[in-house]
Amino acid sequence: MQCIAFEATKMARAFPGRDRSSWCLAPNLIPVRKNSILRQGLILTKVPKAASSTSAGVALRITDRNRCHPAQWEHRLGSFYSSRLYDKSFLFTSIRAPDERAISSIFYHKFSVNRPGPDTLPTDQNILRELRGHAKGSFSDHTGTLSPGQGGFTLQYASLTSIPDHSAWDETQPDIVKYPEQVLANVKRVVDDYDMLLVVDRMDESLVVLSLLLGVDVGDVVVADSKITGETYRMWKNKPIENSVCIPTKKSFKSDAVASFLESDQWRASNYGDYVLHAAAHKSLELTIEQIGREKFEATLTEYKRLKTIANDRCAHQIHLPCGPEGQLQLDKNKQSCYILAKDFGCAHGCIDAVLDKERPIKRDYNFIDVQGELSEFKASLYAR
Image (tube, rainbow, N blue to C red; front, side, top):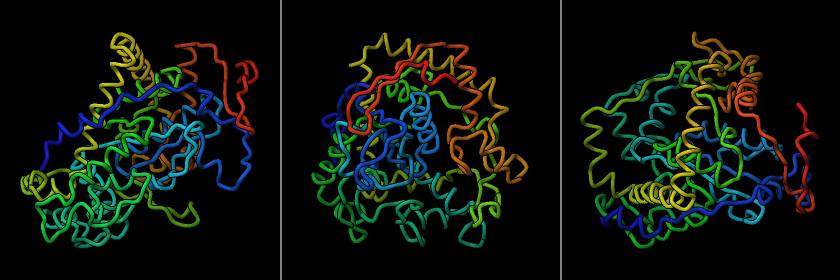
C-alpha cells in the first residue's frame, strides 16, 4: 500500500477565502428553475456519523445569523451537488477517521434500534461482520459501514462523481488495493471539488477556519455541545411524528479483537481512499491556517473557545433534544430549542444568540445574492430583532 501521508501531502491544498456575497443567498429567494436553489448557497454534504449534527447546526447558524437563505444540510450523496454553481455556492463536508466513523455508525445504526435481536447485540462477532461487509445493510448509502469496494464510505459519499463498485477493492483479494492511482485521483477530485473540509478530530480549529474563509464572525460558528446533556436516548421516528418513541443508545467501544481487525491489511486496503482523504483534510487544514496567518488564526481560535465556553455554561439548560434524559419524547421543547424539529441541530441557538450578542456586539452589513444573482446590501437595522 502506498504511503498515505506522502500521497495526502501531494494533493492537499489551502482553501481560498470567499466573499460573503458569493454564497449568501437572499432569504426570500424564489428559484427561477425547479431545484436550481439546490445548487446554490451554503451547502453541507452531511456525511453520516462524521460530526454531521454539529456541522448541520453550524451551517444553519451561519445562514441564520447572516440572514441568508437556509443552508442545505440533508443527508445527500455528494453527487447530488455535481452541477452546483461554483460562483454562487460554498460546499463543505466533514471528514472523520475511517475506523472511528465505522464504529460510531455500527453502534448507532445497528445496535441502538427499536427492535433488538441477536444481530443487534454489540458482540465481537456482530461488529466484525459489519466491518467485513457481511451484515445486512453494511453497504447502505446512509446507515452503512463500508462502500462496496469504492475506496471507503466517506470517499464514495462525498464524491461529486459516481465511483464504480469494486473499482478500488474486491473481497477475492482482500489485502490489495485495486488501481491505487485511480483511488488517489478520486480523493484528489474531492479535495479539489470542495471549498472546505472540516476535520472531525480537529473540529474547533476547522470551524474557526470555516468562519474566516466565509468572512463571518467567529461567534456564528459557535454551537452548544449537546453531549453535555448526557444524551442516552435517540428518537425512533414513526408517523405521525408524535407517535415516535425514544430508545436507549449504546455507548461504542472497541475490543482487542475489533481493534486488531481495524489495523489489518484487509481493513486498510478496503478503506484506503478514506485514509488518504482523512490525511489530506488534515494537511489542507494546516495549509489553510498558514495562508490565513498563524497569528490571526490563533487569536480567532482563542476567542472562539472563550465564546464556546460561555455558550455551554450559560445555555446548557436550554438544550432540548428530541428525547429527554429520562427517555421521554419532548418535541415541543425540541422545536423551541433547535433549528429543525426532531433533530439536534443548533440547539439552544436562541440563548446563544442573546448571550453572544451581549458578549460580542458587532455591526453587520448583510450582503447576499438576490433573485437575479446580483449583489444586494442590507444594513443590520433592516433586521432589528
